Image (cartoon, rainbow, N blue to C red):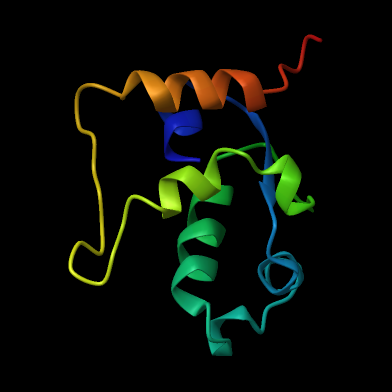
Length: 102
C-alpha cells in the first residue's frame, strides 16, 4: 500500500489470505483484535486512496507472501530492502500482479 501511495495510485485492491484481517478491516472493532497493529496501519494507508478494497484470496493465490514470510526467523524478525528490491521478489510480484488495464 505504501508503494501504491508513492506511485500515486488512486484505486487499490489489497489481497489477503487472513479472513480475520479482512473481516476486521470492514469493522471499527479492529483496534481490539489480536491483529490491531496491522489493522491500524492498513486503515491509515487506505485513507490515501479514492478507492480501497480488501478481498480474501486462497493461500495458493498469495504466492508472494509466503516466500517473504520464510525470510524471517525467531532471531531475524524483520527484513528490509531500502533501495534495491531482490530479483526473486520482483519476479514473484510480477507473476502475481493483476494490472487494472488487463
